[in-house]
Image (cartoon, rainbow, N blue to C red; front, side, top):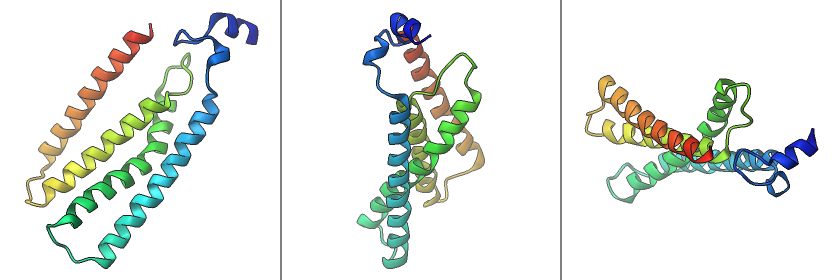
Amino acid sequence: MLLEQAERGNRHGRPAAMERSPVGEQRGMLLASLLMFIVGWGGLFYLVASTRPRIGGEIWLFFILLQIAVTGAAIPLVRLISRRLAPADESEPLPGVVVRRSVWIGIIAVTCFWLMIPRYLSLPLLLIIILLFAVIELFLRNRELGNER
């Protein structure tokens, strides 16, 4: 079976011998997720607990740390959902796809918090934002799948 895989190559057109270990990539992605989670939520806790709310650099630091924290928290969840919903004939989801989807979730969270400041966020606007990013992800994934074939 291993010989057949080596002769066939993988779905990206590279020989199996040149392929990086998917276990190592997944482990590295989860380690980066843990680091982002700790730095993001720890930084947010320190920022909220030790500074006064001003419109200066603190608000931009808040948005950056929120992006890092939500992305770090979303990576394991997106990976789990991608593994569960993938067809049986596909292997592990690509780490780049999982990270990109997690970044989309972080951007949605930051956008929602930004819209909450002037009290513009509503449920219909939230659904439109989520739909917008879902359509963008759908187009990007279809383009990737077209290039893989």
